[in-house]
Amino acid sequence: MQIFVAVLGSNFDLIFKRQTTSDMVILSDGDSIPNMRFFTIAMFVRADSAYKSGTLFSYSVPNEPNDTIILSFTETQVHLKVRDEVVSADFKLADRRWHYLGVVWNGATGDMSVYIDGPEIKKERNVLQGNIALCR
Image 1 (cartoon, helix red, strand yellow):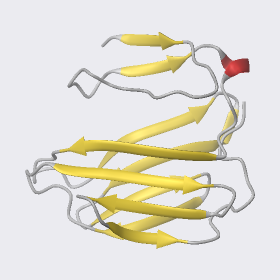
Image 2 (cartoon, helix red, strand yellow; image 1 turned 90 degrees about the vertical axis):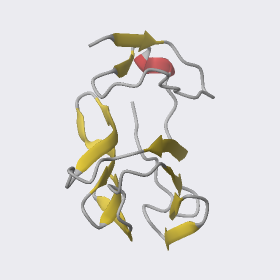
Image 3 (cartoon, rainbow, N blue to C red; image 1 turned 180 degrees about the vertical axis):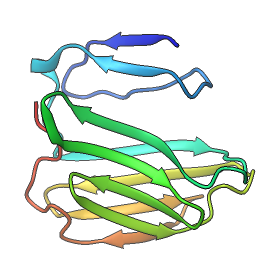
Image 4 (cartoon, rainbow, N blue to C red; image 1 turned 60 degrees about the horizontal axis):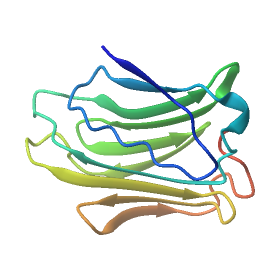
């Protein structure tokens, strides 16, 4: 496993170019990581039908156990969890095909959306509206 340490400004993208399940990025410049009032997570995913569930992306803040983002799937759904709020979209992701998966949260409006292969397949309103998703 390789761990990459990144130093970021207030506007950044994390791009994982390696194709392994054990890589991670540690953001080392804690004071300059911005509070997240909005975020988008996008990826191409191909999961074998042998997988019944899995975590696609996770983000957490040290010493803040409630400040988490988890993007995961089960046999029949894709889940986006921000803090204690979960939005679930019906979709069988583990079908051995490539899928484009995107999720968006807007803290100002509270809109949370899940996109699969282009169209928005799930939208929830008032999800943590007016909140900051993750604080340093």
